[in-house]
Length: 279
Image 1 (cartoon, rainbow, N blue to C red):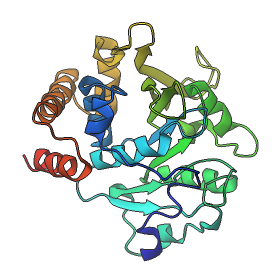
Image 2 (image 1 turned 45 degrees about the vertical axis):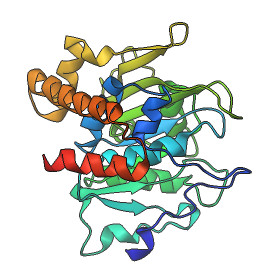
Image 3 (image 1 turned 90 degrees about the horizontal axis):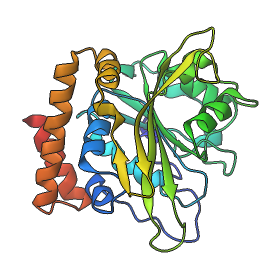
């Protein structure tokens, strides 16, 4: 399993070298605010699977996903998938521990051999039924696009497995060159839906809009603070809506203090997040 411990072609191939960011630098840049990041933190702390999507290349998908990995529970095992070369033998080893492991794919596309595509994506989603959590990125503008790509040929991931992709973050980017505006455009939670169909186009999958970005106002509409949405999140988390709200508010207050104290760099952010966990 050692070959899966380190990223494999994680940043793909680009003309410009990657510049990793911390979650605090993402907040400082305005891509998300502390309310929204606290929500994402509360979900990842409970091992939500996550996919970061955007249509254009160089939109910051991998940068965002990499930063969010610091919000996983302490002691989480990271398994970096190996794209076209992945055999999934790690899942059959005696020391495999699905309940404490994230499987990570740098991108779901057929653009490079280091990315995940075809039957390997189906196999990755099958791992979620065994208790593994998933983290990845994709070229897709909306949550509908994400679900359509996963459910279409050649992937054909069934709705019951797509519903295990708990958190879908779609990014907006004004320009992939220079200092373009980047925002968490929409954040959706996926879950099992009515097999007979409903408001969503794919029976068996139900999205819940948690947040959307108002471009004109450059502000986030925090739908996750509405009572009905809080109830959905609390049910997923296995707690009461009051307990869920208290946890998210506690995490927001901690992020606010980090921001006020000037905690921005990757290592100092990781250290501060670790101290929260111990507290």
